[in-house]
Amino acid sequence: MEEIILSKSCIHWGTLPKSSRVNNKVILESMLDDHKYWEENNPDIKLTHSKHHTWLISYIVEKLRAEDQNHFGKLAGHTFFGNVDMPGHDSLRRNHYNRADLKQSPGAVIMYFLNGSGEVHIENDDPPDLDRVFRFTIKPGRFLCFNSNLTYMRTKNKEKEPRGVAVFTVYR
Image (tube, rainbow, N blue to C red; front, top):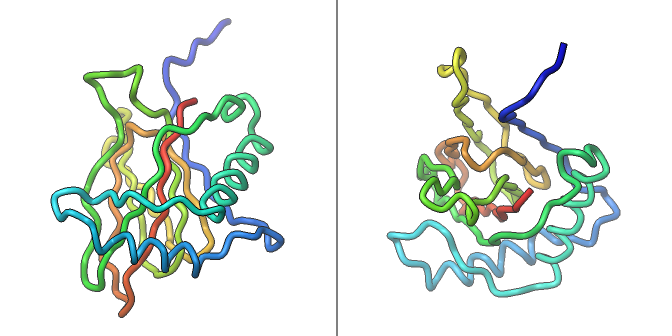
């Protein structure tokens, strides 16, 4: 018997090694500074480049490649931006799949949580389990990677401080 997999939805998560040089506080301060120029009709904040961003992306991509070379061996950068969820606010319900231009559509979304708490809800888009939702607990220093076509949202930020999330999309 043979099998052909037409598509596969995956969710991976983990943390950075304690030896990483990524400084969440530095990234968050820079993100909040960039947030001052944010336009309310666009949730994605263009971030000022920092060596901490480069380290962050490199650590996570290499960790994913080490865990599953077949699935993550060809990851290449697409976009990098920040999201800030203010106290009492949640994120938009969205995905990063561009059906109109599949060649420019990223394959995966990676989120890194700088601070805060709450959950990320990721909706399953494959029958027969369309009503199934994956719930991921937000903790500083954790990352989450999933297919770009999966719809997600972050729950209300119940902290008194803004919640910072570094987001990057990648081609596979």
